Length: 419
Image: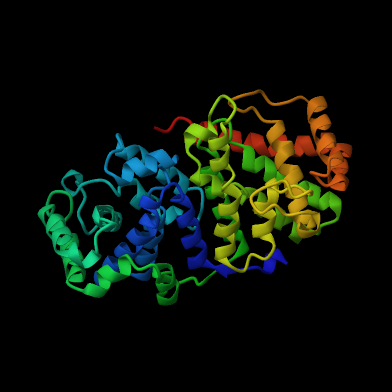
């Protein structure tokens, strides 16, 4: 049952951090590698366990406020204008979760150079922001086409020259103490880095309780959906529709909560899709749609690598599968898709049809019913679940709109006005 479900906290965060950087292989694992550097510096400074956790979580998601793949790539190449914008958005996103909120100030100031600080380095969030700033700069300067031990001396010299201006001398000293060790550099670029960190335990809380999972769902639902006003309420609507349909179908409260969780994360793979495609006002080209089709593959793999989530990865990722095998990306047929996956497919298309999109207005009830009925008749959607939705259209649509209104208000009041 979901209320008894726990997941490994570090695995959960590492998988979601990886999802934020799906856009391009040139930035893959940037946040994870930055988190390792920052974690090692925090240990070198003999900081408290709470401080280590704050820094590590901040580093794992420090670029979360760069909402599009394009911005993330430009940021990594030191080419993004108004660098502080993503810091401000990142702080706002962090404050959505009790687990992340203590790290919000670190994210807000992780690009602030030392010469602009008026507070003492002994102020916790100043020191912690400086550690993240240096770790971020080191990782972004590492060339991925050059053997790491052929770069270490130049990287160390580059950071040292920034002492007193970009970084406090004490923070540079922490880095230099680590930089003399080959294992430090080899760990940063190791393909096994994600297995190193859970085993070594940078987080004191080994398992994540379901209430904390739900608070994190709010963060990542926002990251997925708040890239555009057209998608600002989509995952909210899908999650509410899936949960309501599941209860009506006979799922118990625990199983329905799993459906809600899966709905909130069903489009996390869209982190790999450029904004230019997601927000295109016209029909996608064949090449563009091929890029879109990867998102459910990534959704499945991201959630599946977390472990301990049971059916949730399949329920989240199979929403574009069709009962006749013509869907994507796995081309599953009816007998390979369980009821949760079939519910999610109906919830996703129903929610999408009722929303405004860049290329059309949200559809009225009549056309929506016709499309759903046709899909069920053509063996694309489950006919029993589709009939259940159509028979309860008013109640389900009301619940979806109530949930969407909450997300819309959050988007407009907290995020739409941010830089």
